[in-house]
Structures are given as C-alpha cells and as structure tokens.
Image 1 (cartoon, rainbow, N blue to C red):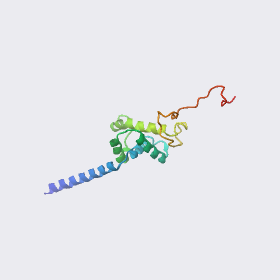
Image 2 (spheres, one colour):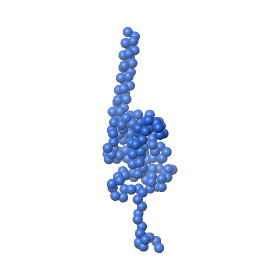
Image 3 (tube, rainbow, N blue to C red):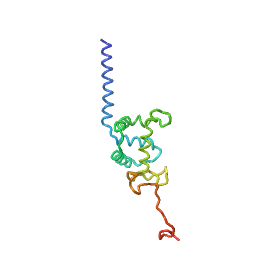
Length: 153
C-alpha cells in the first residue's frame, strides 16, 4: 500500500511540474524569446529596452523563424540567459546560428554602427533593417564628387 501511495504521489508531482512547464511554454511569446536572445548575446552593450521590444515585434513580423524553439527559449529565459556561449558547448552550438542572426539584425537596425561602434553609448533601435530597401545600409556613406558645389574649396 505504501509503495502505491508513493508511486501516485510521484506521478502527481511529475504531472504538476509538467503542467507548469507546459503552461509556461504555452503562454510564452516569440517576442519574449527575441528579447532574451538580444539581452544574452549583447549584454555588454547598453541597450534601450523599449527599442529592443520594438525590434522583437518587428523581427517576428518580418522573419519566419521556428515558433516552437522561440517559445522554449522564452519559457526558460532565466536558465537560457545563464547558458554558456563558449564554443564546444552543445547547447551553445545548437543555438548559435539563430542567436547570431537575431543579434546581427538588431545591430544593423540600431545606431550602433552609425555611432562608430561605441560600446559606451546607449544603443537605440532606429528601424527594422531590410537589406532589400534602398539606402538601408548603415555602412553606406554619401558619395562626394570632386568639383561639386558641396565640396569646400
């Protein structure tokens, strides 16, 4: 009788824990995962939180990315933020491509490169970077032709 009772208590505990995790995954959003990725990988920068939230909304609206993986990241964000990013770590290797894709798009969508890659300044989100949009390149510089009226003599 005691073995059955322990088994049922253990089964109820496991079911409760699984239910809580399932509820957390179900309630998690893709935007929360994008925010967690940006803060984890770019934690050495001063980021504008409102800008990161706007970027997450724009990123989810414009990029097709696995919603299941993003919900898992969002549900386990406190654990995810503590995961190692060092090469050779199996979880880091599995998530590296997606993280780099998100962070590269965030940096291109911000004023980070326009301000000379200054890590001491607050990084502001300026608008979603679309490589197909003309003049959306943060590395573009105006062309100056010699002899033009704009050039000082």
